[in-house]
Length: 77
Length: 130
Image 1: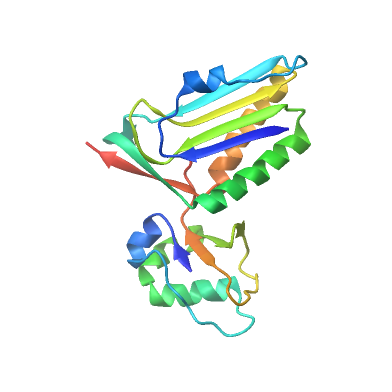
Image 2: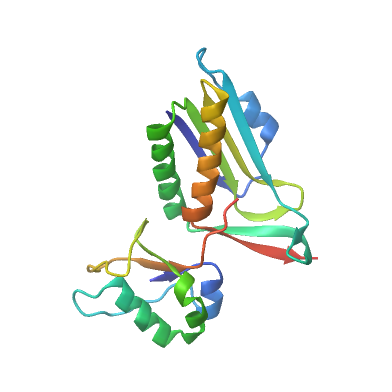
């Protein structure tokens, strides 16, 4: 999975791999990520989550090889 | 609808972009918007803003927004440029052009594009202090 913007500063990495059980949801990944990277807890409610190039909800079930991105609210313009 | 999306670290040359404009004879409105870096962010004085993007996802999300524009308004063309990397104060970080038959749909579509971009396109900024 990938962290973008200041999430990469908070985690100390732009990219990491997480091994998950079958049928893991995006919300469960978020819980796992917060355990590994507690500095992201303050942004828990504002975290945007994407799988591949699409935004997905917490109940989205991940498949093998999915690339998950977590990032803060966007600020283009 | 014709679309042209540029995401680049290069400076935005508004004159060159205007010179390349192509409009059909039925088009009566061009709306251009430039988003320019201000010299302050909150209470802090800054020299520039550094923009970062998840570029592949940004291009995809822009394409979805362009599709939504096409479904909603009779727009002939959209051109959008977003700069990445360091953008100094007073320089544009964003340039949007919409051509349409009438001003109402051109203004509305341009506003919609920017509003949607600010909600969905994964681009972030980091102010560079003095």
